[in-house]
Image (cartoon, rainbow, N blue to C red; front, top):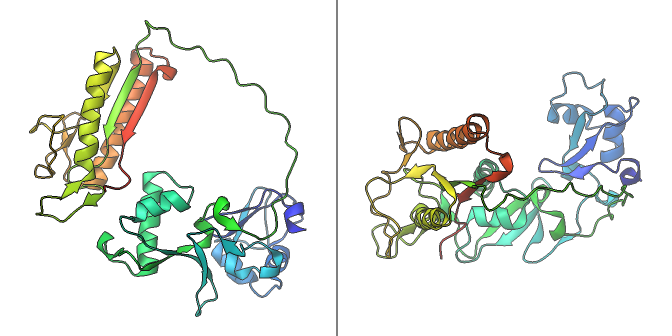
Length: 316
């Protein structure tokens, strides 16, 4: 019944998210409807940081932690598709998605696989939360065979089994997409090529430092980026790098991680990547500056600008 009344509600990272659609809705009413009693009224107000819990406005979002909602309401999945499984925390009663770590798994690869998040900042934040939740200290703590717990709220709907079926609504037919003018063969395409990581940030790591098999993600994607730039230049595209390593020539037939740390972001003046956080911000500023310059100063159609940011999920 609740899903029929509120079809726009959805499962989010923090819990079940309800959007206020009626001026008569109240927090105490929602608390009783979603948790089965009014007992958690003040807890729910604090959880949503409501300055005045007695007043809700249309469009406000109220998030209810999933473990507060009775199972009989059908908001929780009754199972998860393999290789995930449901696990209950004995102390709190909260449900988690359990996963047995396999060889070559990384926190980032698992987040990309089981959640709908793709942005690097979100993945970094969620990876940090997973490490804290599971008591992991560094990627070295993610050993094959150990159980990793992930909040149920993070798991994509396709991997949740059971619970009440979502309410289906008839949507009006989508208008036909506007016809886009394809660039002619004489119109140059401008490609911004960004090789991920670098400097103090190696990205994904394979092997052990000091051993012959040691390799880092940045060296691989940087080599790919240099090969790509050569190919695009040969085909008449206009290319712009965001990062360079002025001390070594690429592409290379054999990669090593010996020179990592000397790369720089091609802002003015170039920034040596001594801080991973600053380097990421510099790259974003540079990409935005290149885009604005091409559009505003050079009059380039935005449809003729492409950003290729190259990353490697894991090295194996």
